[in-house]
Image (cartoon, rainbow, N blue to C red; front, side):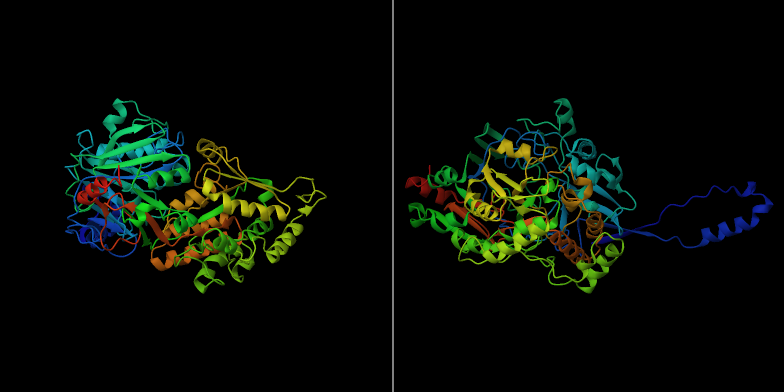
Length: 638
């Protein structure tokens, strides 16, 4: 990484022939100051940036280390998506965005699938920033074109920034807008972002370079609106464009033959398919039958029962469809059941703890999941950031001031971090946990009435309605409902259609009691995105903070996470955050699968060693035309 020294310019308003005698002393001091050496500001000029430490790839790298640089181009890969779609605008609350509808857009910087810290120049040649990262200048490439052939310039970057600033979803604006002091175009191919003093600068250069870029010309000429849904995508610089679609049923994206970045080192061995096709199905069972019939050709499996028992069809036995377990090094997905904390019945943490106690993972894993899943305890499960035991001295140093301020109970400094309940796998209803949960609800004032249901002092019934679109959740959620009803909770789990779920689970409606979902953990290097999910400012405007969580102590911990200057500081801050969130029992942790389960028609190939943080099937895999022809010749594929 090259560095350049730049001396900050200095000026003086003194006109020596006009300085009065009384100011002679001040003049001498000024002259002495001018004679002192000026402290230079170190400006780093590089081909990318890393959150912590140096970039792994040098400026002259030929291609990413995990791709096949000689991968052939061609063919089609097809996958499925649930529900339906009515928009190609993934950046608006309105509408149901199509799968992969952000495929058209690129950003100035891009990450890799083997290094969570790195962001490399894609639309820029180099970037410049000071050691404190308080600003960044992107020196943009001059060969970048939008998919309509029009040139890409700094004006498009400024336009896209202002578009998200003014019309981005509220959860983004509430967190991000205050971090930018100014954005200015220096010339047609240079743009400078200056960040607000007093905010954390660590992630800001990467964040500024990570936003999608739209064509200003196209947006204005066609009167587009970022806040509205629509079936005509905006123009971007990406490798794929829209080929065709059937509303709510099918989408085909095609590789742009005039893509500007075909020979960019970041793209060598990537974007290998001529077409990416998405087929929509109402439920997973229909999608599975369509896969067996060859309607689509690549499937990532999420259901352990189906993975264990339904992949025995003739094409598997004949080798026409391959079934593969591919290890993943990524953080657990955070699958949980969240409470709507706006509801009165969930205000007491004893109630939330009680409701979590009767979720029987052990029985579910044995009876429903064939023992293939792993329990989640932490929001940052499968990472070093998960809190364990009692606080370390480093965690205590973070938490004690919050206790002293009265923002956290003193017990947070001495208690073991709560773990998910452990139940017997012999029966769904674990009597020991049922007794614990009953005692907690009694303490919280929810007692059993003559009808067998729990009521508070006002006579209101303890209700917990859960909804989702996924039918594959029915067995495990129905088992949970049985246990809740044994506890005296008026519980239910209902399948609703996707538009209903989008409306009920999104701002400003939030019409649900509890919801099976994935909570935001920010990945292996969490930063400002956590504020969209956990900060008080996002309590009522964020689809990532559906539970309506707000806690001033957590707000301060989020600042520490965002401002961490080393991997060690980040790990400690996230552990402290994890400890606090788990102590409040705001989620019922469920489970995750450690590996990728995939099945695909035997015409796709991939690099021998896949990257740890992404499967990459749509990009770094490729199509073997000879194998495809053989499948078609024997009638195994349409």
